[in-house]
Image (cartoon, rainbow, N blue to C red; front, side, top):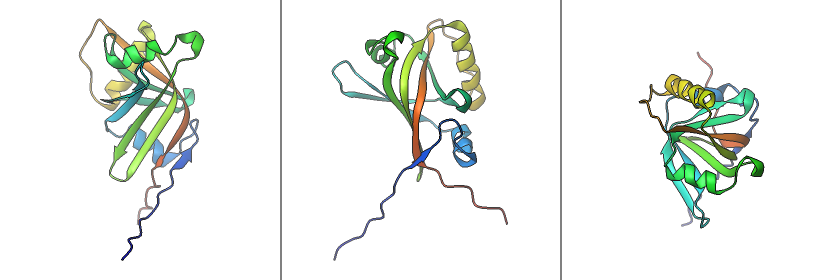
Length: 153
């Protein structure tokens, strides 16, 4: 007897205006994964906390300078190259979202402070680090499965 499997087709979302259901999902406290490419081209996937700012199409991951993810982004080219491809994926049961775009590392004090502030609002206040940097992903594509909330009865 053959089994039939439901096929889920990912929805595309507007990075500028993700909509209320996706916007709420991106504000809930969930961890995600960040995928970058090592110099040999193999994927490096690590758990992260992140924030997303639709008005700037900007996802932020706070981290520290000597991390592998920072080395991967830096190895892919500097600002002149426009960054390197990266993706952030958040999953909660059947709901999921992937943000794709170009990543770059910033050690600018204002950029890091804003990223820490946004992280603290979504997760918790991180400990102080002198070597803190932020990976900024300029989001060009969002896809996922985030159904609209059921109407209240």
